[in-house]
Image (cartoon, rainbow, N blue to C red; front, side, top):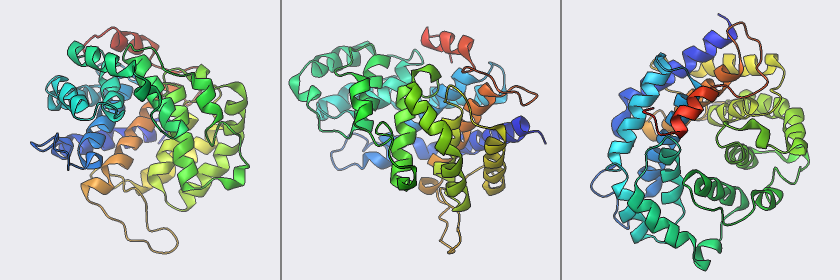
Length: 326
């Protein structure tokens, strides 16, 4: 099996599992309750939307990946009552940034609610919004969400990048699980989730290109499948992708860890025999990341395994941004 075919197989199986488990992403009648855990309601739905937007953007229309992602994106939008729930959510938590961060994924696909945008634009002009105490990588996400939603960014991304772990170019041996997730999301936000690879500053891109291979190898060895998929997505989001052998080894390991029905556990047992939960909450994110990383990788790698210099799916990106049906 060629590397592109193996990657495609992982991504297709992942989205098939997500499609079969879509009820797990549904919002219930308590979605707006103050006591509701957003990490079990809004967060999974937002992650589903974001991944589906990316898969649609980077895959040709008519393919199984594109069709599955389009169907799931429509499902996710329906869960928000075509965006109306964002108005209620933001009114309940005026200075919470997560409603806008989730909405921005839909907005980038042309799914918009003008009433919400009017409301949040007022909030975003306040001093309270500009003074939200967020970690630098999270603030980069808010800035990207503002841009995607048509709002003027309230700060300069370059300034926030310099405050992140990755932006400081730390000693590479200080990489660990928490730093790994921080750096992957910094690149996600800088590149608008793999859409604009040229937005990674050259000094940061060079640093990641140099050290991503050993970092990925470390995560694969420890069977950290969720973080490994995020790093594979980063590999496909750099101006110059790493050596193909590095990526191929990563996808081979992920393919071996993926379960027959398509789910990918967050972590494997590793050397110490960790328990491996296989319920929805412990599989959905890593499975989504497998689909996301797969779509990005396929967009950068030709059928013969040749690497592309720039991001794939440019034509699709244009149609999504113009509000065409995903």
